[in-house]
Image (cartoon, rainbow, N blue to C red; front, side, top):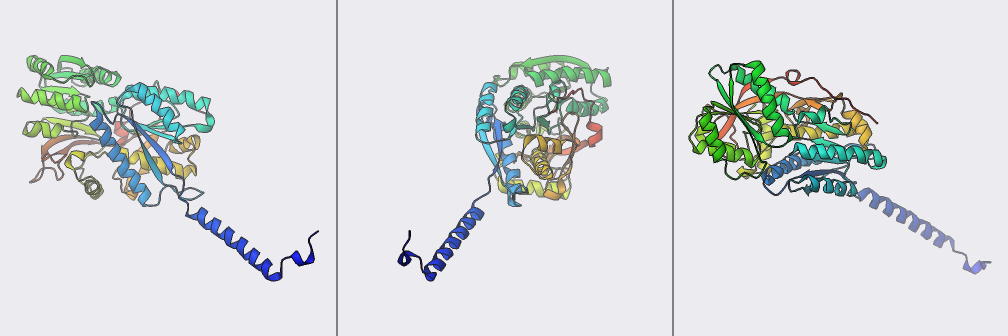
Length: 434
């Protein structure tokens, strides 16, 4: 039993209580001061190798939009706002490496996977995530796709866990071939693409669409080449010259496009290029004046759309990345992150299932958050429906486009705009839902 003399005095009791209160207050302050747990977005992309320039360009786009979200306070959730964190995972352009990095990303706490620069890799990631999400429902993950455009990814291979924010190849081709249809002087076309799922799809469907819309156009050549391994496209350019083609239709991207265009230019051929990606990554600078009036590209947006929001975004991006060689900006990548944020806030969660359900059918106007672009995520197949522009290369300034590309002195002007509903194509998706 404690002796009377060992009992704390009233003064000591007060001091002990005050100390405890101070300790609790300090602990509360420490908790309040602790940074919020970030929401991890894992970019799995080829950041080195033959298409490393394209991967790094994507990273800058995503970094730009993540910084914008965080600057306005992050993602607003019931437990408080949380910042976004972008993880860089280099697949080196290899699908097996991408699958290994997927496991690493999940182990690092990422619940959103971002990829796009290969439809073959995207298909493998979809299959892997379907299995993972069934096997580990407590760690489900969503796949946000910014540029893998094989149509099957939102048709036969559609998945509840996959959302595509780019127009797929058939949607893009539909716009390009509508412009080709209007060119009455065009009589001969050459089709060339990379020998993998996307490139094969572009060549096959281009032939079909041209035949349906302009049966008088003769397809004078059809070629598939190894992806990322051709260092000299002169033999292909020589075939194009021999065919008498007036136009080349290609889904090539990265160095495969730049080197193809360079080889054709070196032969002095006067042909039009109908491209998916001819408005960036060195192509305008490679072509120079030879590209004026001859290179067309299809995209969801371009620098010279002409509205104040577009001008503001281009200006902000160039201040953030002033090196002209880093001048690669796409509205769809901005919209992708912003729509994911909107879905998290709508779902009041970062868990895969409620966020996916919030994304389904989500209509988004980006102007309010500084993105001059809008879209509707179609619920039936998770394909974003958005405007498309076919634009043509021209000299910038002095009556030409306001903004040039990559410091080249050449920009793109709108040839034709297609409103979102006009770009939509029927879906063949039969989706399994959790």
